[in-house]
Picture 1 (cartoon, rainbow over the protein chains, first blue to last red):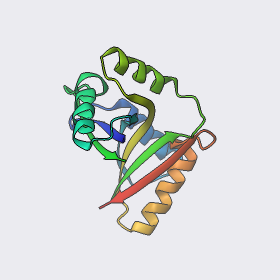
Picture 2: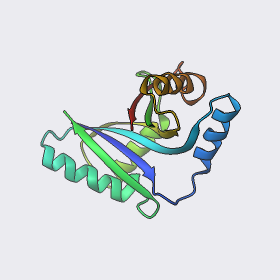
Picture 3: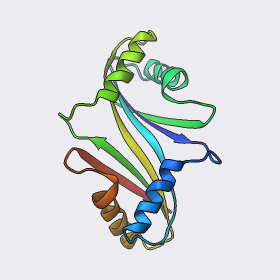
Picture 4: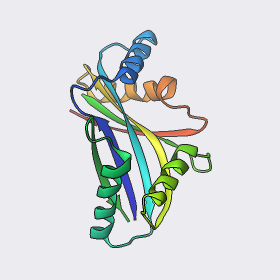
Length: 80
Length: 80
């Protein structure tokens, strides 16, 4: 199975990288950009074929390594 | 509208960051991780409410700034 994981900063956490992108978009002439937030996207290919077990593993991966749950949220979807 | 943009490395492009995550997952005891690819996830809040115009703007943002189309693919979805 493959897990598609999105890791985003929690609301209220400063995102200088997003602000930099927002500034660059403005400099390139894109108007009407209200906000930009940058996160991470991680694809993990798993040998596990059982959906419940894969979900459990991905949940632990996010908590233990991929996301800093103090400042980040994570969400994921599993595709076979 | 809000654009949710995923930027991923094209197949065949080396991804040392993904390999580092894969190694760290192995060191943490997660077995059966066949591959890890890291990409970027960017949320852009647009003042534009017309879907066609927003799509056009996001397409240009991806090509001009957000993605390096030589080595990266991008995909996005628009939500209101």
